[in-house]
Length: 623
Image (tube, rainbow, N blue to C red):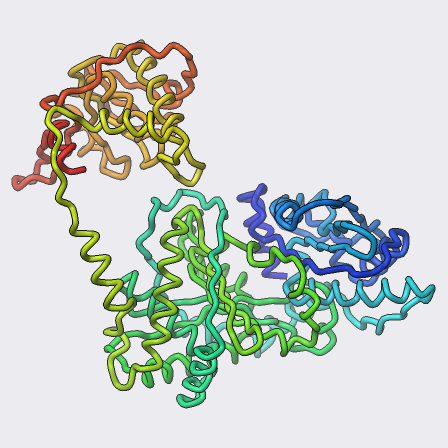
């Protein structure tokens, strides 16, 4: 299907990613008969073709290979004496283990045995073969099959009249007829001049997304949730539309945008013959929210209700094909068309009993992270709402995610009191929090120690907190001790390359840990650095490098191509310098307050860039 194609291509870009792994876990409070459980799993595999399908390519095009018979595998783990945390950690490790779509099984089942009649079952499957409803269907059918097997009975499940391949055929035929043309015509108009969400981020967006993420959880209590349901009814709309409008408004405030696209999943099982079939039926709908003109709450919800209804009325057009047809300029670091998502799960409408699952250990909150910049999921739990904000760790810290959650919750309380106020003027946090944040932000007065530099502060922290995290980026973290050791090793390599006290060295690098390590290493040598943005035009970089009279320029192998370095200026490769792991850490001169720390070039009033020299004493005052 079109969605499978999109997922297959994403997996080729990031084969070690587990962003599209799905997992469900539940108590298994039965006598454990491994033979009966294996037979029940095999019946599932034989019943649903998606569970015995591999995914390969011919001339670059993905194809499904349906195996006539494929053994269903079961892994038993002896968890006797294990704490809940150990089991959860093992479950999460299984969730994070990537699938090889061409050669691996597309699903795996684990049984954690803690004692007699005390077991936990986990099913992990790749999203290309199943969706969220499918994995619950698998668990429900497995439960029924196994209970019958324990009684010595053979359960005959209702026969399936269709398989997932029939859905692929149905979808292709639907899109090829007049109804398909009407769907495409709608989406062309609906997404005309669609916006790209441009949120401020904690980290520079990587050139290629790693699809790594994390989750922050929260809860909206029963009283507030009931008030929100009543507010939605008052405005003749749904709870989903109200929640999505609040999230869109919040993102719009952060991005300073009034046109917001949010993705939301729909089941995609409109045809009754597909409702009991395991497969990836779910479709992603882009829903547009118009925040322009300072609307009040009623106007905002009225616009959103119409937009949501229009999108839902045309939900059969697959998102994967939408990307193909609209053909946006591809950015491997950004999700195409839509960068944020929202979903409201209402388990009572799905026809499954979730109570047993909810009573057991579950890692469901930690899956499907990193697919979007931000993805908000709310689940009805009784009358309350359980919330999860999944965020890309390429872009955001947990602290930022927690702040977004707090602002979302506060905005919902403001909705309850909004009356006729413009929603764009609603505060995102309480007056007390705003005043506290403002006071903390402006509390910058500090005595300035005489004769000290940043390196003195850094050395003191290394001594006092060697194992504290000093630096984090999308590749991992370094402690203060590790940062100190690696920067000293780098200083040794720079010294061997002829760099010494008083030299000015250009750093033509991305904003990553190498930049920080090299700046520290240069300061430890008594040298200074000049930042050279790789995104600047080559002519501007050449002028700055020559005007600054750099002793050397350091660039990576990938960025150095096309870089023009003046005669007499050496070009050093960061990759080679960083490879130095010598244990020889020489005595380094360090830097004095009146010595140069770095040079920064401004545009200049004459049009030519002008360099500004910052000494270590100035830098210390900034801190």
